[in-house]
Image 1 (cartoon, rainbow, N blue to C red):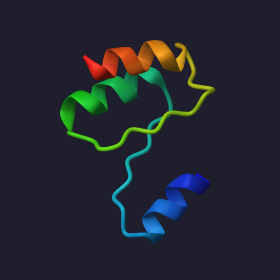
Image 2 (image 1 turned 90 degrees about the vertical axis):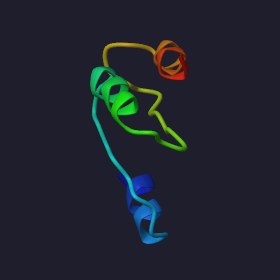
Image 3 (image 1 turned 45 degrees about the vertical axis):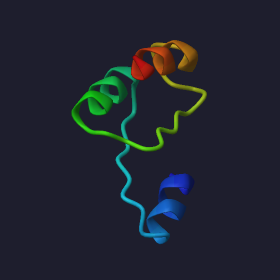
Length: 55
């Protein structure tokens, strides 16, 4: 929440999701730059999720 708030103060557009499935689907719908992941992503480790997003 703190990162989101600070980015929005700098006029960045921010989308926030709360699980790996939603994260993956969002990255398929939109072209994000950059993508930031929480180390405590539910359901899947962040390395596996990054690999899926990168493909």
